[in-house]
Amino acid sequence: MNIEGLDYNTQREKLILPEYGREIQNMVDHAIQIEDRDERQRCAETIIGIMERMFPQNKENNDHQQKLWDHLALMSRFQLDIDWPFDVQQAARIAVKPEPLPYPMTEIPVRHYGNMIFEMFEKLKSMEPGPERDELARMTANQMKRNLAQWSHGSADDEKVVSDIARFTDGKIQLDLDNFKFEKVEFKDPERKRKKK
Image (cartoon, rainbow, N blue to C red; front, side, top):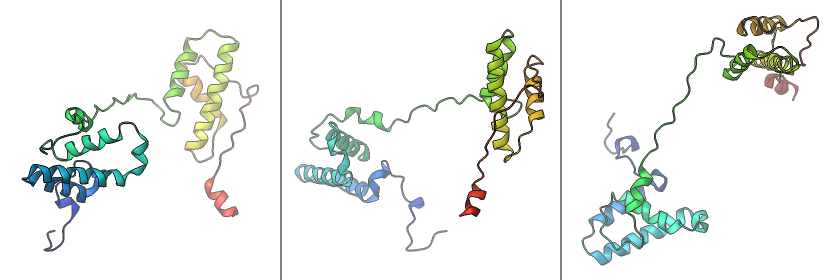
């Protein structure tokens, strides 16, 4: 849609440093066009003064002035021919985006338990029977019940947890519901709280 007289940001050139806004970018573009070097220098110093007033909280930083001049160099695409009070050659590294971090995408059979519970299953499978394995099994079962309660909006079935822990540990962990007691799971329902008010 192109309506005469309306100027949308989506139709404009993308800002190099959007935190300073389009007006500062326009000032920088204007400064590049100034032919007189002294006038261009004064214009650049005025722009730095305005940029500094936009973020007064940064004045406390030791390298504050260096950063402002680096930002000016970036916004001018290094085309501003002035006497730079700082070396701005390293400013280009500010604009370089870091490589995205790889996100571990492991397939787990039941997503509501989470990856950590499946790591605990693997640990339980390899442990020798004894008090340490019993304690880890107790902690794992209780966390499974909490996860199940959270994902199924408050309902957590003890038999389901016992069945799942046996299945995912290849039968190594068999909890007896007559002897094993789960911790009480308190599921906070935000809707119930709102109704009470």
